[in-house]
Image 1 (cartoon, rainbow, N blue to C red):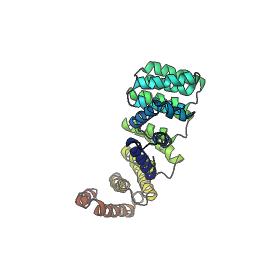
Image 2 (tube, one colour; image 1 turned 45 degrees about the vertical axis):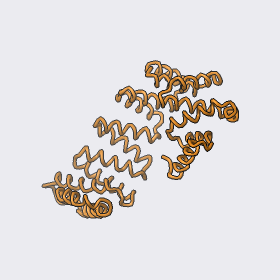
Image 3 (cartoon, helix red, strand yellow; image 1 turned 90 degrees about the vertical axis):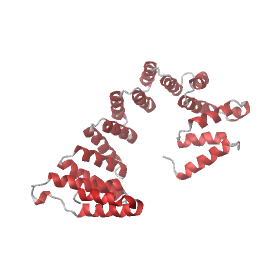
Image 4 (cartoon, one colour; image 1 turned 60 degrees about the horizontal axis):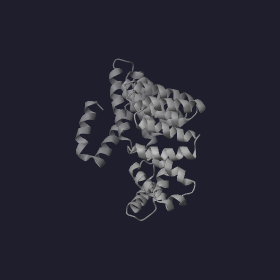
Length: 300
């Protein structure tokens, strides 16, 4: 995710280039540096540089970087012929390059030649089994074909090698949630919390999964993680505040007839309900009555 300052800089430079103020190469470099997706602009301005012999020669060795960037943008814009031409130039310059080999595989993907793309990736992995990009391409290819079970299989194999990849754990968790495989999703979020304990998003997602699984123990744990989300966000997470109230209500229902020791103190849910009402008064006063009615139905 880019900062507001970076986004502002990018937009300013983009407007400058679009209006003929120059700076096309600087714009393409910034897009690459920030890892943002502006494929149409990259294709337009990249081609304008490559089609101008003077501008192209001024790039020096960076010319090959532009060919790669342009090939990726062309695939994204459904311009396979442009991508093919760029890759051909790179093949001629770097005939044994694995990086160019990845581009060839991606072009096969873009054309929908899944079997050929898989064959190309398998061949590249034989030479370098630790190529993260190719492992991720396999996951993307399975998802593009609607093969969710295949995506899960490739992600699990990838995480056996690259266990510290937080984005992969999160992607796997979200796939499991979409399939209602909540226990497996909970495991993924546990891994994320262990590796990044100060990220409130993971605490919140884990609490949501546990709340969905239900059961007294899961609800009690979910309540703790909603509380930790509130703590990590300085009390400003409305979803977590509501989660506290929902968990409290569900726990109360499941705890009926149990010993008093099994029942929880009402202090936390009271604070959460008060904070929710205050938040709604400030940001959505017209919906405050709906919130009050909902909380009353939960007997909070």
